[in-house]
Image (cartoon, rainbow, N blue to C red; front, top):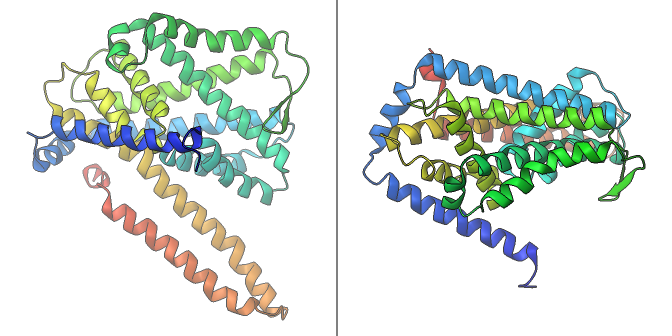
Length: 349
């Protein structure tokens, strides 16, 4: 075991940060009972819940939009129906589980491979969408550092210099695209030059993505801190969550946002809004994506196994009940997870 390697210390640092975040949340909420949190959740206006759900849907449409653009960039345009399915499932898993290049791309490869795309095609699509995501995060995160250096110091994220460097990254990317002509090799994949218009669209889609995800939390908050102040806190908290490598930034994002909101009159109400945001933007899409993936696999796998069984392929008949059992288990796991998480649907009725 190499104790000096990043692969060893990365998960260790992530676990330590999650533990520290949970400790902070425990201290901040020590005077808040579970009943108070549920009461705060119940007090979120139905209009706010409905608007947050609508914004979440719109956010995933935007994600599908720049995957559509990525497919055209990679030279393998696809029908929007396929792209919408792949984008939703891949992003829902990647957002919640973290390590988006691994978790999201593996699912996308499974889907796109079934539609005839090569590994190189999927690699180019994934690199394009991942780069787009980071361009927005880095640029908006840097802008947040510049707008609120005190908040940046609270999270030990640096100050004006780091903010200026990060803000300049997407601008430099667009500037370099004017001179970028030849393909480059990234992770073994040949990436063609994006062109100025493509680079600008990447940044635009990413800004829309992060902006919509922030608005989901904004409409759930018990008070109105002001849009500029809120987005500064939101982007810094997201930056902290991504840097921590915690899956979906869980715990770290919530802790960072609460640290940056010392003027909150009601910690219970703030935590309830963060919990509702976690459910609407992360957990609910994950459950729907898992169910969609399970149904899709059932529709495609079981008929093939039955066809093999009728054709007399040795051993195939025994695979049919096993496949059905596996799909039943997956569906049960989804139902169990949905039952164990706070339900938001009751307040919509």
